Image 1 (spheres, rainbow, N blue to C red):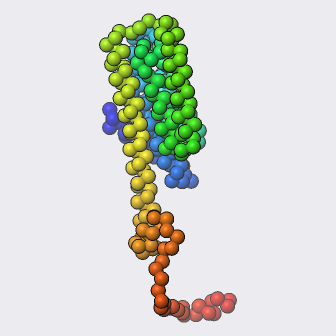
Image 2: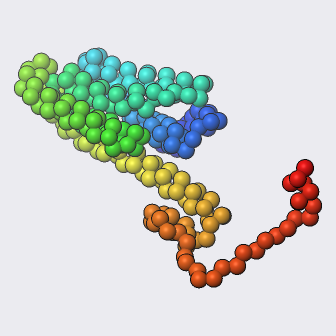
Image 3: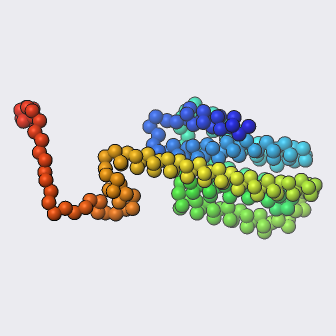
Length: 245
């Protein structure tokens, strides 16, 4: 399954790459694509279970995520440009798990499914940077706090699922978001290291290794001092006549 998923994501990456795409835009697109593909792959577990429990509204939330994300994938593959794609995914990660837990009846009966919303600030961190990630973390913290305040009320709105099922889904809702974040960070770090390696290789083609090392350390002085220097002037045959023309 995961091999097929990797092949599909790799194919989508090739089809959705724009010719004028820079390194940062490519990293944002591939990072978001991979994390979204993982969530789409595991979403049927929640959809089927909630339908079996007779909770179509709860099943509709992850089902809606799958539809929106697959539609975004198709748009990317055809148009090769969807600048709003990362923002759409971050918004879905932040809101849908919270709404899902609300519909299930709080933390206990929803098996803490709202923990999935932590993926939103983590994705924002890798795609947009620290400032945007802090804002989304604030939204995550506020959402969890709000759910905690209303947990007693929400518990009375729905019937409790079987306890073994609650335990299984609690484990899934802890392990799966953690694994998703891990996949996100692994991909981001690998892509960043690959980009740094390409940059260093390019610099080493035109600069000595000692100067490249100083540039990487952020030193302003990149050349050693020499008391004596020799200037070599090379004349090209017929260059003077060419320059005067």
